[in-house]
Image (cartoon, rainbow, N blue to C red; front, side, top):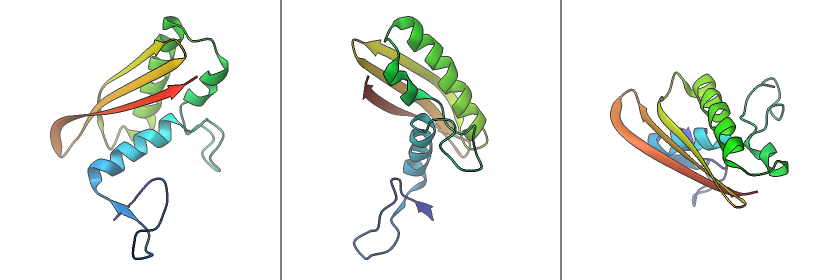
Length: 118
């Protein structure tokens, strides 16, 4: 059973579960939007994406962030997903992150897209 993210209960009052595909996407989201130092006993967990709120948005920042996000995803999900690519695009006050990945049991490439206003 995979616990759904964010944590909640289902219509029967039980812990909500999610299929494997959604669970992997949830894991990616947790890594992207967790700041290092937020997790107890895992001070390095996360990517620092949310810290970009206080930085100027530019193509250079997006390129540096792309490298950082790819490294964080490899570190924390390297045994669960095959990372095919990470793309970070900055447009005005918005960052768009696109993660392409597959799981070892299924070679189909999946895409997860996340957009945040800065």
